[in-house]
Length: 192
Image (cartoon, rainbow, N blue to C red):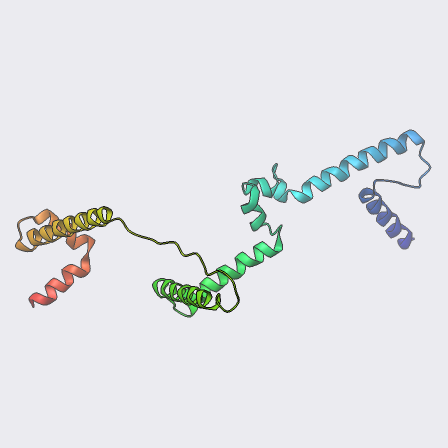
């Protein structure tokens, strides 16, 4: 008897998921109503499956859609894996190995220079055209303008520091002491 009850419960559960085809002696009209309501409930269950916590919109649209959402949802496993591997490599370089950004940039520039040098020298041996390296020039007037602006700002900063050092402007002195406490501490240590 317990087995029969268990089977009937399992049959009901499987009928709910597979469209509600039952082998009971109901009339044809009741079967159609039951199967349509079972199909509707199956669609409702399917809608709830794809929408976590009963949300109205799918996760893809919540994340903004497009390629960033595809990346986060791992729709293209190769791209998502490549991004994860790249982020892990960057983390290992900077955090674990204590590599610095400026050092990395310098090493990348040296490596690219070596590759271009070898490519241009090897192109004669393999009968290929050498790489087309564009000529880069900084215009003189732009460089002069940058230098003049930088000189003006540095001189203005030195003048401000001189005024603060002479004790003429108490307000600026207090602002510098609050914003840059290591400056104040080094001055106090120098006076002692």
